[in-house]
Length: 125
Image (cartoon, rainbow, N blue to C red; front, side, top):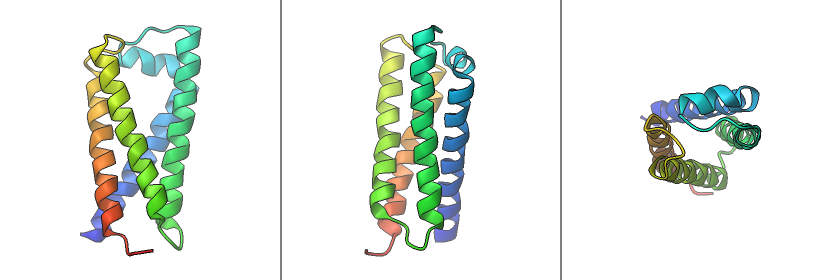
C-alpha cells in the first residue's frame, strides 16, 4: 500500500510539474481551455502561477526521492494544492473560469488531501 501511495504522490507531482511548465510556455492555450479571458496580463500572471506549480511539483519529487522525506515539504505542498482548489473554485463561482476548470479544482483537492494522508504515513522526524 505504501509503495502505491508513494507512486501516486510522484505521479501527481510530475503532472504538477508538466502542467505548470505548460502554463509557463503556453498560458494562452491553458486559459482558453478553462474559459478565461486572454490578455497580456492574464497570460503573464498565469505563467507566474505555472512557475510556482512546477517548483512545488519538483520539490515534492525531490523530497520523496531524497534520503529523508520531509513532512514540512509535504505539508506545504498539500496547502498549495488545497489553496489552488479554493482559488480555482472561486474563479468558477465568480465567472472568471468555465465549469471545465472544476476538473482542475477537483484534481487539486484530491491531491492536497492525498498529500496530507501521505504525510501521516511518514515516520516521525
